[in-house]
Length: 238
Length: 365
Image (tube, rainbow over all chains, first blue to last red):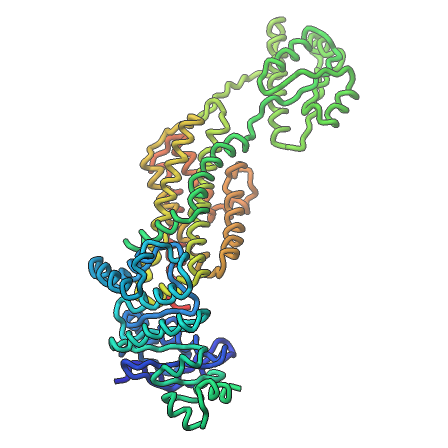
């Protein structure tokens, strides 16, 4: 089943075309890697998919709703973690969870239950009363991801979720992503780390507003006769 | 409700915000109300009495008896008097020419010369007016005692100052300073709050959630609305405690009016925050608007003296209406009926600014 269907998406800012007739779809439960050089238009696409930007033309259906017509219905069914870390720095871990849980209409008891379970899993229980700004970046990222999936959305959008942390922390973060995928949450992720791209079910590579490659990492490598996605990326985007 | 709680938590955790909210108003009220005074007191008067007659002595006596004037200086020539004004040693110089008494008694037109330092024109005019009044009185009394008809002053005006009988300048300033306080808090803080979320990026996170536009806006405005009213209460209490400012009207009416006015201010702040991208921009925009609105509002200067275009401009100045409301309620004991036009004005202001900001606020960016 396709949970994201994008057809001829065009996004223009004045005379600049950020997304030029994109067409792709993502299946339910898939981990979809959305690669591209800086400025290729990834973040723009993601914002359109999340209902933050209204597309110039084309049709975008996310979780069964047209983004242009029902952005609020789309928002109910997605989670989003931006590259700019965006939990409230001056609130504690549990306060942040409470705020977002309430926004998604979860009851207080339910939020409490999910918070306990989540903090247990993330091993963050001992810092639950600490202000978020005192946490390390790796912890903040894990927390942000868990908050984004707290309401069990059908899709979670991750915009460079692991930028700026060490390989071990990144590996741990990806364990969370796999966990989410096992729970039937579709993961749509952008990244600049090509080793992470290898973990995805399928990847697309974007360049100058267009998708220039889209398939499983395995088949892409075979088709282009390269050893790694890294090599492929460098070859295609240059 | 959780969102409102979140805002409160963030406001009270902010180390700069909290003192800003409660210490600054206190200091402002204690310092500004006293310092921003135009009360005239102890104007330095120099008297150059060339007549040295009982009449001239009488005039000098009347002047030194007045609390407005400090008549310690003496000069022996007009020349000396002018020099003293130029050096800034005295503000007013009264020069009595030789022969004043003679002229008066022989019913000739009599004259004295008054030189006033008019760098501050308002004080100069007041000095002139008081001085003239004092001299005329003294002369009138002398003429009366000598059974001569008092020539100039045929009608005596008796003045009583209503609503502020002791002409206490603080009574006039306190409502004004309170207005500024509420205005600044309402606009600046609400604008800053939203823009801060833009800067930290949390607004984007909020925008991808299904949170309703109205719930979000309400959660941003409600805390500052409450804080504004608490500040008002604090200000009124301080005014009572330190200055004994009267409260002729109803407290409920003041709070009702302020609640409406605050709604408008918060809407304005939010409106600014919809197009400002950084706190710096928001500060400048607010600064610009508030400065004009406050200086035009009649807090220091009477709006009656403004040119016609200034008065016309003031019809869209919310601060102008609110200062009027505050002064009328506190000093005159105005009731709701008296203030209907002003109330209507701030209602329009509130409705306009809130709807503008709601319309302009987009969850898309």
